[in-house]
Length: 243
Image 1: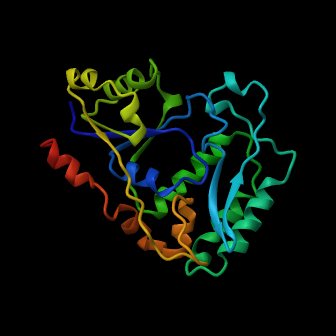
Image 2 (image 1 turned 90 degrees about the vertical axis):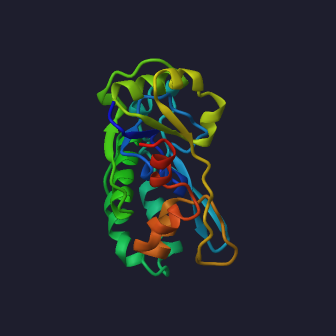
């Protein structure tokens, strides 16, 4: 078995910093667009900062039959001009940040396109964020594979089929990972417990757990260093398992 580290996550809109730390620990990342859509999760919404506090940006979706659909099948409700609202809100609240001009072109471009599927929008954004953060990982999509099982068994099947030695769970993985099964398969597991950094933002009072765009607009190329600060590194994982 090759000494490779894998992690995975469902499609998320404008992700928070912790997702990028988890991906940065891995050699391979699976964009898990085959899970069931979760309407109260972060698949179609996330938070940015304004002078009056945090603002929730939500992409409207067509809810009919969503309980029986995979995330890759969730359609965006384009009856309202949500793109214009999101772009205007981002511009209004970040136009005075140090790196606004470095990144705003991307958002102007992405919000002028008409997106049919939520997962496609989230994938395009995620790939761009990874590039700007200089996180180099092999990007795979679950829809291109035939992973079977659920929860812990699904992750284990994914690890076997992708021929990896180590899997990075999020902290919630502690609630369902069947550790003995991974041990018996010779696969190491790590549970990420992300320590959120504090950094200088516009407006008063630091607000954690915002979209990564808040960090990028404020710190530009230094964003990766901030994301990884005071957290476990890939080197630590490799050393701990003698990989």
